[in-house]
Length: 136
Ligand SMILES: [Zn+2]
Image 1 (spheres, protein in one colour):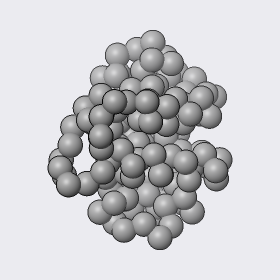
Image 2 (image 1 turned 135 degrees about the horizontal axis):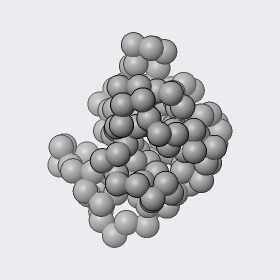
Image 3 (image 1 turned 180 degrees about the horizontal axis):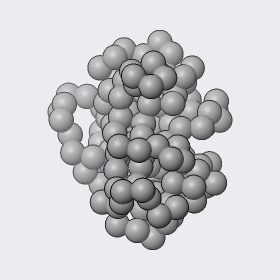
């Protein structure tokens, strides 16, 4: 859950930023855990029905899980830093399938939005992205 990090955002920007952030976090998580990215499910919601806040859910695709979420939760800071590095270090202009995922809105700078969101999150050091036990 992003809480204050997402305050003052336009809904459309937040949606793009959340999805871009989620994709990068998913890619980095797969590397950290040495699993296939498809083993990790991803859902981003501008307003989650669970906490009424912008939220990125990263969950284990295997029913019941095999402990990946716990391992990710422990490496939360590394995960967030890795995601920021992935996006910032990508050679694209404003988001691509390798960093923020396929572009759905060609005129929107998904890269800048996701990075802005990530930096706000790191500054807040508010846990997000890897919630242990989060289910589909
Ligand atoms: Zn890119």
